[in-house]
Amino acid sequence: MVFFILGLLLIYFDKLYFVEYMFFFFNSCMVLYVLLIDWMSLMFISFVFLISSMILLYSMEYMNYDFNSIRFLMLMNFFIMFMFFLIISPNLISILLGWDGLGMVSFCLVVFYQNKKSYSSGLVTVILNRLGDLFIILSMIWMLNFGSWNFILIDYYINYNYLFFIILLIMMASLTKSAQIPFSSWLPLAMAAPTPVSSLVHSSTLVTAGIYLMIRFNEIFLKFFFLNYLLVISCLTMLMAGLNAIFEFDLKKIIAFSTLSQMSFMFMILCLGKIDMCFFYLLMHALFKSMMFLSAGILILNMNNNQDIRKMGGLVDCLPFCGLIFMFTLMSLCGFPFFCSFYSKDLIFEYFLMMDLNFFFFFFFFFFFFLTFFYSIRLIYYLMMMNYSMNNYMMIIKFESKFLIISMFLISLIMIFFGSFFMWLMFYKFDLILLEFKFKILSVLILFFSIWFFFEFNNFLFSIKYLISMFNIFFFSMMWNLLFLKVNFFLNNFLIIGFFSLKLFETGWIEYNLNSGLMFFFKKKIIFIQNIFLNSYKVYILLFFMWFLIILIFNY
Image (cartoon, rainbow, N blue to C red):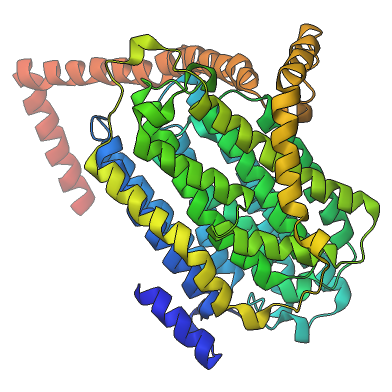
């Protein structure tokens, strides 16, 4: 609340503040720790703290029976701390502190359940995120030529050619962190982490760090020609994520693909030059996506850790509160009227219709809306409308603890009412939109068309999917073959290499010759010397007199 009120004050007075602390000089280059305090950073911090506090309250009950719950809560707090460092940093040194910390802690959280699948998923996550760290480090090295790592005023004193390389490296780092093509494969694999981690990562921290960095670099970023290439990348990622969400049956992975498509949507808005709209949608997405994961966590908990949506159903009868919240989040995701996402998504939709773009981008934009409606309706159909199919879970069902309900209820209230408030708060920053009535209702028409299409062609689509899978062509259902760093890749290669290194080096000849061999050698020598000094008194006295004579000789 404090950060939110301070952000409102900075919006009202139109001010921002720099706080700067110098560590040392390095070849006339000052190493500074800089904080940028403006309305955008304070608003985002307030949302991160709100969502993370509710998730920690949720985790008190969700992780209550886990043996490592204390370690889990400590890692979550480290995660929030590094995101805080990233948000308030206009300096590449302090950005790297938060950026690298997020990658490190995310690896620890993904491998929290210590099994082979979690290990492999954590390695894919940390390797691809390490690429983003590498791009940030390269941009820091390039900026070392100019005497400062602050990027806020970089546009005023650096040549265009130098700016090109810096912003290209920053853009590549953002693509790795926000999991755009070709770095998308780590995002569904990161679902091996506990559900509260997924809720925090996909709503307001790790995945949103890339798009937030591009929002911060917007004044430089919008001047270059590779905006069109980034627009194509975002369109392809939206298409890939939407198609995979349609063909997926794992509940957490469906929500992960939904996050991936929404990130691509934000990159598309950013490429069109609407920074404030992008930030508005980023905040709204953080609210409903965190709620989506929290309600999915309760559902998975009640289904005895089963995540297959084909085995679920009848959610309204078994878990009414959880089902209601999940419905609200899916309606917000679709941009249903008067939910939080409606005010941002409808605004972006209408602005896009006023843009002078070609048919290719219009097609992808409308197809993205159709896919979003389609997999949301599919989730509603499987979770709400189908009959409950796993009767052996009935003895565990209907578990809704007070901590789980309180945390979800507070975020859901903000999710429902905050969109309108923020719309009126930021209205002066948006453009005037003039459209005909048929374009105004186009999003609602796409919604009704997707509902009709789902109920007409659902079985037909899945028969096609099974037909494709018979020929081992997993192009659509395996993220367009981007999962080359799959689970089996690490299990079949790295673990075998680790086994041979353990056998050869640690317990093999090096262990025998260096560790055990040296120990055996010194043990024998110590026993020999002890036999001399403890059992042979004549030798001991002779040695004493020899030492005494040597002293006398050297003195005279």
